[in-house]
Amino acid sequence: MKNEGTLPVLPTETIETPFGRMTLLKHPAMDLIDWSEMNKIRDEMIDQRNEHRKKQDQLLQDALMKNAIPPIKGELTKGKVKWRGLKLIVKNMDHHTIERWIEQRGKIISPIIKEEFKISFD
Image (cartoon, helix red, strand yellow):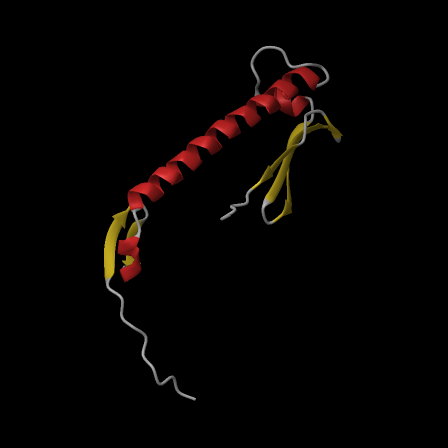
């Protein structure tokens, strides 16, 4: 059975990116969106995520320095981490949940940090 209808042809726009040229489709409904507000929301989400990640990293680094056996003194280096058998474990629980913690030779030495990535449109 042949497709009797034809798809509408949408206008396109070609832009230059650091990765090369990209051709974007321009849907008429896209003009109805206030992109400045969308960009503000995106920037706020990125800022909150970065701030949250810094707190998590500090929590893991403190646990790494204090709870490792023997405790790490001075600057944190790759050699000190490797010699003590320390590993950062990242486990995907499902499509929108991640857990992170630090282990020393199979023993958990840091709090388990659980991150959920859900967006609610309520």
